[in-house]
Amino acid sequence: MKDFLLGILSAGFGDNSLDTRKIDRNIEMLKNHTWFKDIYEDEKYHRLFFCK
Image 1: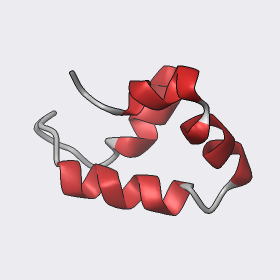
Image 2 (image 1 turned 45 degrees about the horizontal axis):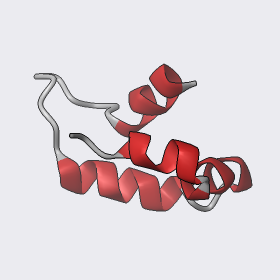
Image 3 (image 1 turned 135 degrees about the vertical axis):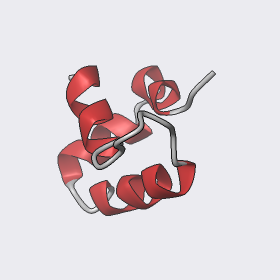
Image 4 (image 1 turned 90 degrees about the vertical axis):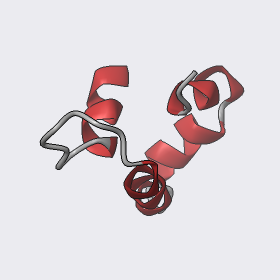
């Protein structure tokens, strides 16, 4: 599941660099889906969306 979400969030990166603005936009679009919103708002998964 984690790999799937990372793939969606980082889709379109040719050089494997992070574009946090694009990731933020993708997260906002995904929040329109109940299944994503449930995962994103769950504390045990929420921290996985942020790089350390």
